[in-house]
Image (cartoon, rainbow, N blue to C red; front, side, top):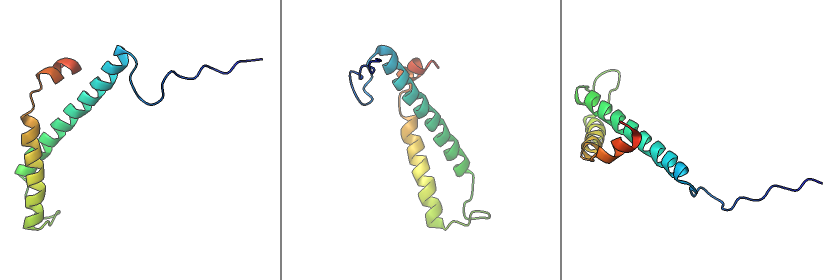
Length: 91
């Protein structure tokens, strides 16, 4: 008769090895860096785009809200020291 497999020692997503910690943190930091770059690109595009014109037709208030949200987020993300993040993800 075949015995059932041994249940795992833990449940959930707690990393159990240094390898798993590196993989998880590396993935998170790579995703963060990609988002930071994307927000920067959005901020640059929005800075020179008039959203009140075709094909967007936003109101002035709507345009200001969108542009302010992205500009503020871009400024905050640019203030983050990327030294250790870059080391971890290999940039």
